[in-house]
Length: 182
Image 1 (cartoon, rainbow, N blue to C red):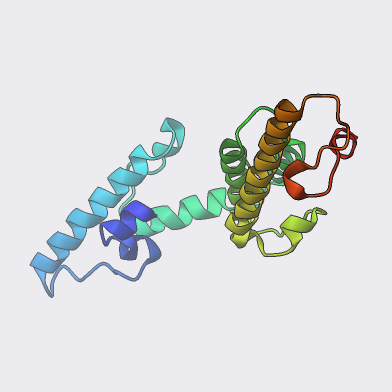
Image 2: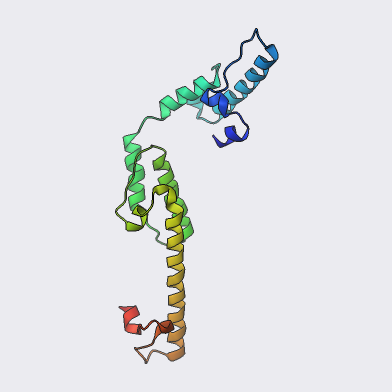
């Protein structure tokens, strides 16, 4: 879709640029035919070989697009289930927050393509719609950075004062070592 919009050819796909009459303006028809054929070629090369066989002899790009849309836009319950399962099972583990966010957002975007609502019991995800996932990511980055700062300050205080004082005040927060270590 992005390539078609960038090339100003989306009208061939959505049907707003219709085939002109051959009799009324042969130059206009030739230009339309050239663009239409180019888009059919793009579509043919964008799908697997067995699907391309059904496209290669098509005459109108819009009809190809409608056929492909009808064939592949059907809700696929097992696929939706698998995507939801992947989202639920996703764990940051040793991934950076950035990589974790990217992988999780890709799954959410894929699920959103099926046009079904997905809800999660986690408060941070329920505070804004899914389209605002970047805000949730920003909050997590801030929280991660604050945690790293507190851990660095604790380590610095711990090294400076040694292990003998169990009531070290970390960065003036009023927490002793026992509060941090559980």
